[in-house]
Image (cartoon, rainbow, N blue to C red; front, top):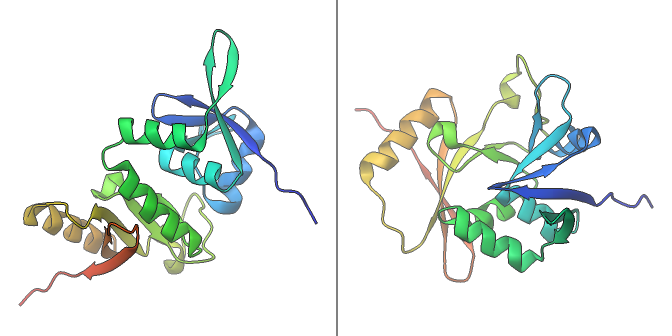
Length: 189
């Protein structure tokens, strides 16, 4: 049985950087992070939600450098840092984890005005032209069950999803950390 590699990443502001060209395999095989620079990548940059997920799965150890030494962070430390640096981090993490555990490829959806864009099971990210099944299937906005939101905000997200031929999902996280997904569609009379 092949032992899975445990990566090491450095926390830099609100990203975790794996300073190894080999880390690009996490992107190529499972869609984690963003290889940088795009041409001839030398590192992989992970969003905090991705890093916490990989740390929870035992695939990543995160450190901060202090006085030239690596100080490793616990999973609780990473969660606290995420909550301090990212608005509604816990809710986003619960939704990200739920989607990843269900086998979906999940990337950030900020350019679409949502938290995540989600690809169907089995899709691999690639640069350049894509087949129809390789495009974003859903854009997902994560909210807690007691969160307030504006209808214009929701309407804008639905229109953006429609423009890229994706479905808009509102992921509602309850007090027990269970996620319920609601599809929101645009109806034109």
